[in-house]
Image 1 (spheres, rainbow, N blue to C red):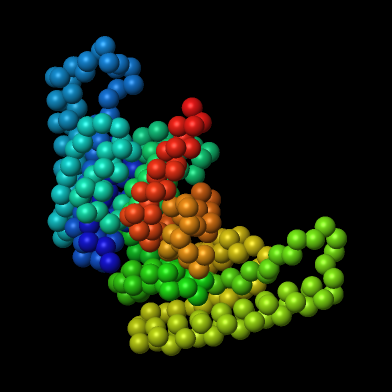
Image 2: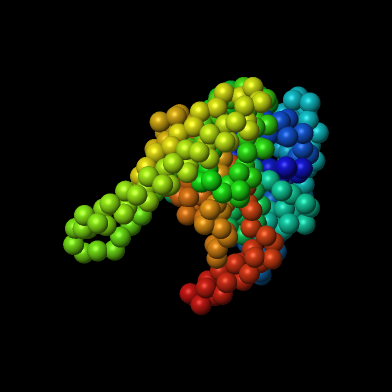
Length: 322
C-alpha cells in the first residue's frame, strides 16, 4: 500500500486538476503528501547569461506562496502536507525527488503549463512515467478549473482489468479501499482473446475448431476465476460487477468496457499475465496511458534492478539515435 504521495505542480490550472484526486487518495490511504514545484531556468538564459539572483529569489518566493495556497486545500481536508521547491529541469528533478524520498505514488496531470495539445500527455509527464519506476495516477485535465480544489473526488465507478494472474491482482487492495470509502461500484473486466493463426488463406475447418476449443476452455477458466474472486470479495459491502467477453483484440475490448461502464477511474498493474519484460509497462497499460480518456491508476510492479537495466537500454538507444 502507498505511504508517500508526490504531487508535482507547475502553477497552471491544468496541473491543479490533480489536487482533488490527491486529497481523495491521501484521505483514503492515510498517507503523507509532498507538493513539489520545480523552478526551471528560462529558455532564453544560456551559460553566458547568468540568472539575475534578485529575479530568481522573487520567483522562488512566489513559488512558495503558490504552494502555501495549495497546502491550504489539503489542510482544509484535515491532511498534513510537506512542500518542496527544486531548481533544475522539471522531469529530472521530479524523478530524482521521487527516487530519493521514498515516494511510492506520483499524481500527475497529463498536461500542465504548456497547455492542452493533440497529444495525450506532455513530454514532461511522458519522461516521468517512463523513467521514475513509481506507481502513477494520471489525471486527464479539463480547461476549466474545478469548482473547489479542496473537495475530494468521489469515484462512483471503478474499473479494474484482470487477466487471472496474481500479478494483476496487486491492484485489488487499493481499489477496495477506494470503493469502501466512496461506496463506489467496482467493475472487474476480463477478456478472453482469440488465438491468432498465421495463414494467408482462410483457415481450415480443423483450425477453426481448434480455435473454438481453446476459446471455450479459456472462457470457462476465466468464468471460474471470476466466481472465485467474487466469493473472496463477498465479505465486503462493495457492489461488484464482473464482465467477461471474448474478443480478437484484448486491449480494444477493455477500452470499450471502460466506456460502456462509464468508469471514473481505471486501475491496472503495469504488467499482468505476460510477466515482466523489457519495457516499463505491458501492452495493456501502455495503451491506456497513451489512449485512455479517464483517470488512470497504475501500480508499477517492476523490480528496481530490472528497471535500472531498462533505463540503461533506453538511454543507449536514445544516444545511438543522435
